[in-house]
Amino acid sequence: MQCKSLWIGLAALLLSASALAGSAAGERRTIFKQYKQDLTAMHRMTSGGSFDQAQFVRLATSFNDAAHKPWQYFPAGSQSRDSKAEIWTRPAEFKQAVDNFSAASGKLVQVAGSGDLGQVRAQLNLVQKTCKACHDSFRN
Image (cartoon, rainbow, N blue to C red; front, side, top):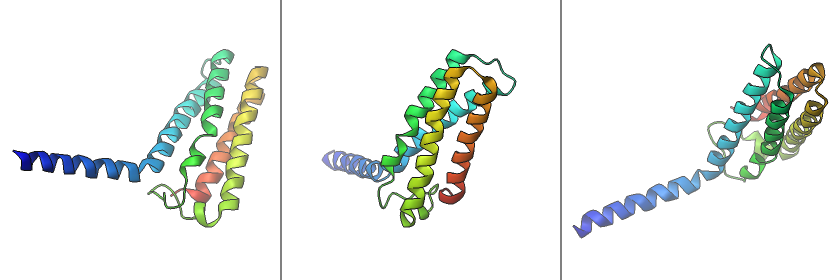
């Protein structure tokens, strides 16, 4: 019986070590999933859906808050199937892409407060372009 407990304990230890090794990629993946949910909801609202300014401001604020979170989860050696090596071999360019995205998402919150649907759509498109630019250069 002690042998069985030892194997169970060893398996648990190995699984927890494996989870820790992949935690940076997992953390950033979780944040990016939140981005997608917020972007999808905002896009629906601005493209024929019912535009609710208060709800859009909440979504834009949530998105902007999350926009500053994943970058801490890109330490050296945390490459995953989704990330290109260029994140670490071209850090200045990666930082510029992150800064462009962060600025665009911050401005989205400001524009959302105006209630001008045309400006909101234009800024949301700019946010999506900054996402795409980063994906084109730094995501598999």
